[in-house]
Length: 120
Image: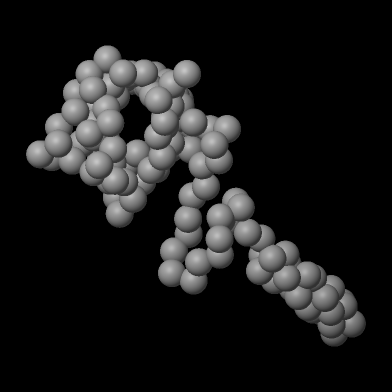
């Protein structure tokens, strides 16, 4: 019985370092720069979403967009919603009806346009 327990412990002990290394080497940042403070999401340019500006609210620092799916945020259906913008000056470059391409992410708990360009 002692031999069985000892063998089981030996097998268990030999698998723990391997599991620990695998977990330690896994990169949750998906290509983003490493961060000691929080996990960052990554939205490459290929994930830009097309949208149409429905409303620009400079006072609130928001833009309302009708847009396609936002896969990086788990929104798999087109919808219309308001977003904060990373740079308030961008609101001067947008007007109702403009077609844009953009990347949105959660910044401090608020859905935010972090990159945008006029659609071509």
